[in-house]
Length: 481
Image (cartoon, rainbow, N blue to C red):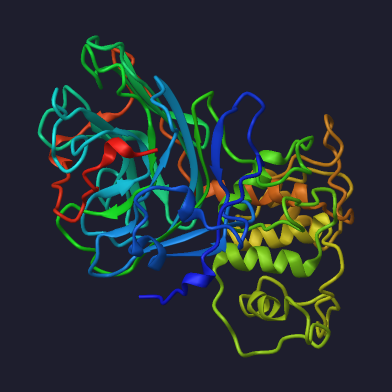
């Protein structure tokens, strides 16, 4: 288990970065400010929450690295309070699963209204002990349509009509979370009119509706005080089984709002007028493209050969090499990735036939980019001559191949009769080329469908969590502020 010093704990930036104008009266934890103590602004913070967390690279700036140590249950578990009992609340957080060889289902952040011991721990709500919760849930890799490098997420819902003493597990559609990629998780809960079945819960992944459950009951007649009071920042293994090894994920940009849907955070504020913004954000979410400064990606800036080598080395996860392939990159910040890039034979140099130099700070041309993309994504050759300005160019074959794969259309829309092979490529265009290449071998997302009652998601009674005695809260929840 990693050792973490209390003095290193980072945290909360409460400035309103990436919050749309419609969302007011919110609490935001951006984990940016190393001088602020995030745990002072939450409730039921335990020693494990401090031992298991540390500042790291986040989705925007810094985030929080959370580890569930081998042999333990809890990675994180404090509560954020609205201070009131609203009938509706919204939440949002960004998450990235680094390594999650879980052996059991477990919990993720989600809303709650906790007033006693019910709404958790397999304790139903009663008239004497009301309460509810809607934490997130995960299923281990390889289960419920997930492959070995995915988890399936959903909602672990305690409500008045739950099937068993433990809450219902309602898996989102599709709800599949790949390791190593940032996701935006959002949700909203609408409390029912006391005594009526008109409550609801909805969830979104990356802005797309993935879960909706209608006709819910959280409170009875006379329980108007039961509301969407808390956001439970829970990351937990189990059930009764401890984590078989260290499990690690990062979270960032946590928001709890009582006034409106928050929406996903925007990592960069200088690409909002770019046609390539969605592709830039996708590369950033996959950790293949980093910004050029805090919340800046410099979309119009020409990408250098060194930056391209670094980006493609991340995509391919190239192994280290001890071979020094070029003489003009000694001491360069990208020397290591350039050598990995050359070892993989994706580049042979910039001064043929000797190829003793790489020209790391030279801008990447569109022709060079076509060659790199064809090699990285193993795109087959195509004999059709698609452009009139690349005849005899060293990259003509690769240009035709990437055009046939619909990675590029040309450089003179709408005619697109030219490719402009010597034109330098700005960072924004590179993002689109690479995202299109990445998606060549990926299946299109499955369509999300609702049942006759408008519900989205599946109830899996066989996937129920069995609570354990370590998943407890103090008894004085009625004093929670």
